[in-house]
Length: 412
Figure 1 (tube, helix red, strand yellow):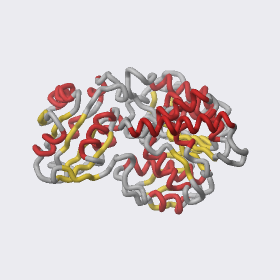
Figure 2 (tube, helix red, strand yellow):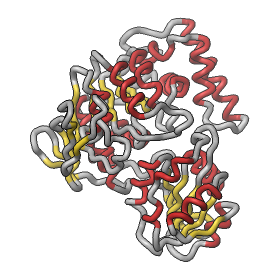
Figure 3 (cartoon, rainbow, N blue to C red):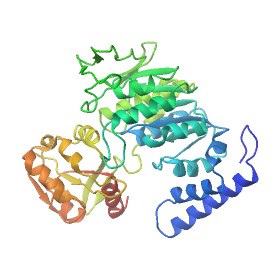
Figure 4 (cartoon, rainbow, N blue to C red):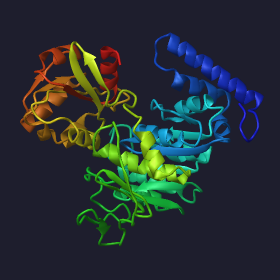
């Protein structure tokens, strides 16, 4: 694999070849894309392979609790205006999946890499990124992920002194705390609808004051930095004060925020906002998210929501009542086995919608909806839910493995 640092060593080539073979076997056995097992095999043979594969690339890393897969896709589209891109577009975002993705990018100029929050500092150490985009931090997978303040502290320590340009959300105090140890930060006013994880100051533990869009700690003086990029309605405001229209096929305010951050990242690589935003219009769906599929004679829009902040954003973009809504919740390893987060979601927002509940933990969700006073029906399958729904396009919202189950069933 040739880049500006010369070809890979024999050991690295062997690792790449073995990884691709393992991935092919996994795909043939019907066990998914094979990217994770392929990456694991490759890294076992050459533990430094990730760093070697990244040496010829200008890399941007994207990390967050919500929106990282979509933002990764938007940045990749924008940077293709300047050259070939390699990306882990399907969301395999731990070191093995990232290694697999980069192994397929020998001719690429840019690497646009989504990184799981727990692995950000380590991957940044390995690949020496030119830019790192930090979108948000909120509670997620309570049995797996660290408490948000601890995660922000790990990022802060891991990114201290990095040479990368950090593109960070000025509206999330946890992100600002994490990014503030870095010497070169571009602040973006991307908004923050979910605020329940940022009421105490990450710097001193004091109570955060939140007048309007501003925030500050009256006790230690930690406060919102002045952004140089901002989302304003349907426009991106750049550092020169120019307003660029956002035209996306992806729905909702959250995706406009993702596009704003993506435009700021693209500018770091020399792609002008107008060009970047025009290219983002090409994205219709991301790994099945936002797709409208035809199933059992009905149109069903597939939406992913994995944690309280994600559900809140998703409720804001669905069609209003009486649009039927199917909710799917599992609690498998990839979801986190603790479903207590359901009590943090404001399901009263579904009032007036006919609601149908599916998934491994449908009864947990049913109890939550009962308490919220939402009318619902428990169904054994997505087929039953779709057939029971009244007329109109159906909005289907599911957490991670429930979403994958639905995609397999509806043939998407």
